Image (tube, rainbow, N blue to C red; front, side, top):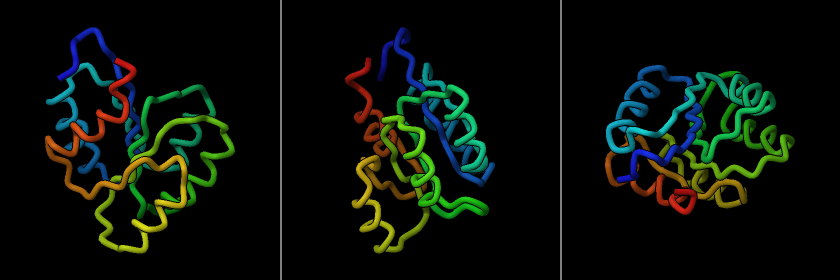
Length: 130
């Protein structure tokens, strides 16, 4: 567990409000000092990123209306930011997993739902910043 002086900023992009609520509560339970920016659309996430949001890590759902996770990554590249992305999805499509390997920004592919071990794995990607 992190010490209380460490602050980590996560951006959670998922069109499912219940998933966002549950995931933010689970993350907060294990890492109470984490700041979680919830975005119900990839469009909102891109707007926030273009307007100064600079999270340490992005958790990205793939299957969303309007702009999918894959389309988000394409647009994200235009921001020139170097923020690691973890795909957090309920997709069990092996092609999605393979496709994720083609993106240097994507550091991991995690199946929903989150649990303590998956949350620890997520925070291991950003622990050097603590």
